Length: 201
Image 1 (spheres, rainbow, N blue to C red):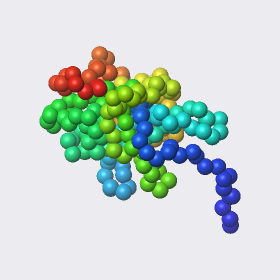
Image 2: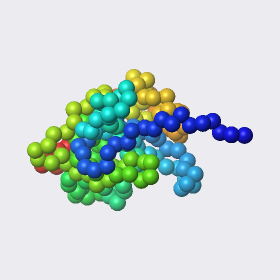
Image 3: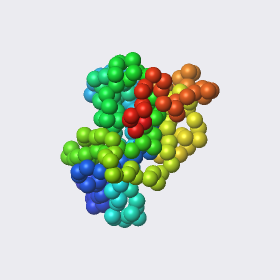
């Protein structure tokens, strides 16, 4: 028995090196069991558009999209917390400040990042604020946030079938606590207690 022949198609990879990015999607992927870690893990996905443009196929001229997935934890030693501190260019003053930070404030915010390769995977390496004299990309895609607390059907409809399938595997998908949208949420505003007068967000 022979496997089907490959179509030979390859996806154009984002060039390595430094580039400006803008955050276009924040997806709470919920909690799923990790076979690797042998425990439940709650992940969040951040999607960015790059100032670098695709050159091949029907998508030529459109910005590259790059992604980063983190365990959804703002513990000061966590990967997500460290990434946000780099992106902001400023450390949180305390664990309390980190806990109060609203990740939704990343949406539409730009940064400067080093794109690296790990085999076939494209990674966002070291990052920081957009340098003086440079501008962040203007987003082409609609800015979207999905979270299980609000569970907005209009947002869910705009996600790919693959992403919807991933969300449906989350423990939170059938949770009674997330079936009804929460009113009067302030997740789109900067969290109180953060002195952001001298940072980009």
